[in-house]
Amino acid sequence: MTRDPGLASWLQLSLTPGLGGAAIRGMLRQFGLPQAVLERRRSELTAHAPPAVIDALDSQPVRDAVARALEWAAAPGHDVVTLADEHYPHALLETPDPPPVLYALGRTELLQHPSLAIVGSRNATAQGEHNAESFAKALSNAGLSIVSGLAVGIDAAAHRGGLAGTSSTIAVLGTGIDVVYPKRNVELVAAIAERGLLVSEFPLGTAPLAHNFPRRNRLISGLAQGCLVVEAALASGSLITARTAADQGREVFAIPGSIHSPLSKGCHALIKSGGKLVESAEDVLAELTGFRRSGYASTVESGASDEVAAGLLAHMGHDPVDVDSLCARAGMSAEQVSSELLRLELDGRVTALPGGLFQRLEKGKRG
Image (cartoon, rainbow, N blue to C red; front, side, top):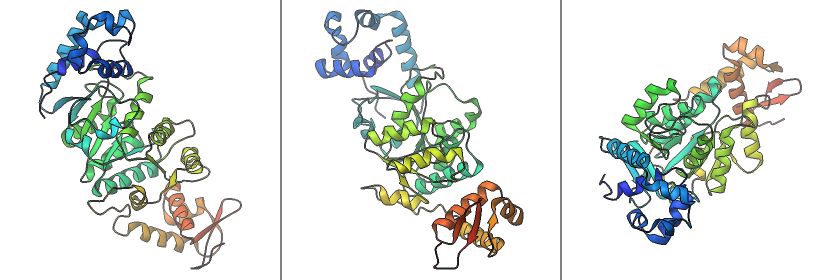
């Protein structure tokens, strides 16, 4: 990528403490590019920020931070993408609060690629992680880069699935791009840096501060055409991302789950409020206006799900049965059985009865 000759000026503005994105954009609208902003008398800039903040523009700490950022950006695979850069993601320009600069490590061309956000609980179930990874792989193979936030649980599974597909993944960090958080994701970070893209709006060295993660969420949804929530409790940060996506005019999708699972409550709330219930990658693709798939997308692996469903129906017999009994008969986990029962129920092949019981239906009959 061609380096912006005015990058130092962009960094000087963005690295000045207390000078937020709104103030910077206001200065740019009034005075032009950052170099022109910095050439104005400091008194002229105080309409956009307090005098103490404007004075800090020329401070030694800011100059040192700019030098560090320029040194970082000079390394292979490292970029700082500015609002004036032709490679700045167009999707973010449509949002109310696009960051003036983005630190990027890896395949920067993915910023212009069609993408889908996949988010969910850090305390995900094994089934939830499997769903996130299989959906992400299928959608990546269909031509969508997978955007998520690098948290453990659903985020990490989504990134793994994106990497396994053809369109890779973008991880949006709530820290400086040179900070690995959480530490257990160090190998995943290395894989994304090599085959995907890491991005952050925060200065180098920024620690994992709690208030930065909600800000990061607007970029996860802003980069994408839609947002899929896999598992989420009612108080989950994933719901913040989904609501931000809706505010940004993005499609919101949710995978349903058991009515008894706390991790399904957030998804069900989204569906009740207008989010689209999805059971497959094809359901997602059908709702994305203007997107044309570039490959085959399926979350069913080689007919495996149909085989499992047929086996589960055989284990059910024709009498009502509970989940625990099915687990014992089929040798499956409760999460696997519940997931297949939901799919069979939606297909009209099983009905739920009072007392937590399930019964198979004859073909063509619905209870």
